[in-house]
Image (cartoon, rainbow, N blue to C red; front, side):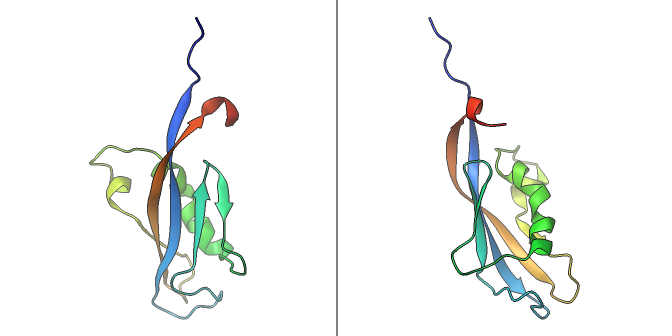
Length: 108
């Protein structure tokens, strides 16, 4: 008898620029987004970009948002992240797209 393959469930995510309360120094616009799929695949729409400083602000939160969290966990309730550039005051929203089952033997 063989053991079942170990699997984990992770959410695919979309991070979208929800609003810009200052001036967009980096050239991003409301509605710009990237998606995180298959655990670690970052996808940006063709012809668009995502500012590395905005990306650096949201990256530490993504592994937690990919997982199921306790109902009382603040990351389960909160989904907004701000870019660190004070000139822009760019606000991003993290959304879960769908739950994906992944074979853990293929992940690092």
